[in-house]
Image (tube, rainbow, N blue to C red):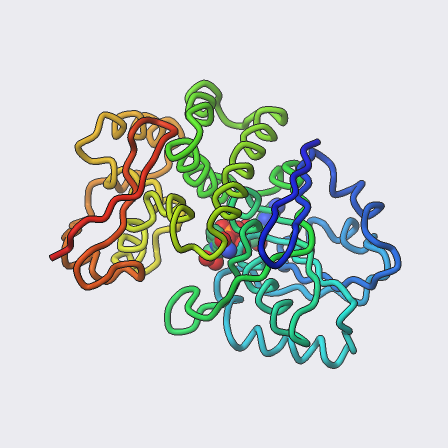
Length: 328
Ligand SMILES: NC(=O)c1ccc[n+]([C@@H]2O[C@H](COP(=O)([O-])OP(=O)(O)OC[C@H]3O[C@@H](n4cnc5c(N)ncnc54)[C@H](O)[C@@H]3O)[C@@H](O)[C@H]2O)c1
């Protein structure tokens, strides 16, 4: 078992990672509290027995799966339900799900009664290594994630065994992000994904998740509000966002990140390393068709100023730096 304590300006967040921890973890919940679970219907179908064992369960809200749950309408419905149920400031919401549930529930918890505790139990690879840590939460409005804030859970419980039921394509979306961590901060992740094949053995998967989580904690502790070094996590994402937009969001985020990293590594010796991994895990078969204009497309990025954009460049595998590039 790994236990980390992520220290942020507003909260210290215990993060536990262990195979089968979820079954045991209800015993580590504070049994004097009341809990309300927000999940999606796919997860409730698979994990209903487990969820209903949570102590002092007020109720379980199961949403329709998918990005559309991160909407004002669903947010409003949840706040209405919490009010009608009489959920109090000392009650706790459990976000049991992928990044969609985590982002939405974090925003609900932050804003309901000016903030109540919530626990993240991430169930996708993306949520376990990325979305559940660092406090970014929010909903989509005109664009993706354009209403949101930073609000940390009071605890994160990561159980890689929950990923057994995750569809393979969803696992592969997370694998692109895992490879991203390897390129920017930890060459041993790249070595392992080169060495092993799917399905990863439980100890291999656990160890990969632990290393990724450690990186996410380090970067978000140093730069809680995404103003400097945390931006290393954007590797592959500047192009990924353009590709997602050009595909009218038909391409998944994970696949777009794989393609984005490929473009951002153009002209470097590391592009071939990535290409080998893309082919090994079949992360995408759409590498070539994107006609990206450096100046025109990058200007639209949220992080770009009128003259420059900060990009991530590799000095070696496992070592990345931020560089300002002109977009004039
Ligand atoms: N806050 C952050 O820092 C951060 C970081 C990355 C991504 N995100 C957000 O995360 C969202 C994407 O999250 P995601 O990729 O986890 O997708 P998701 O939450 O939509 O889950 C994907 C699908 O997998 C199903 N699922 C989840 N866990 C399962 C399991 N264990 N077994 C079976 N099915 C399961 C869900 O029902 C859903 O259909 C996006 O909205 C993105 O903006 C946030």
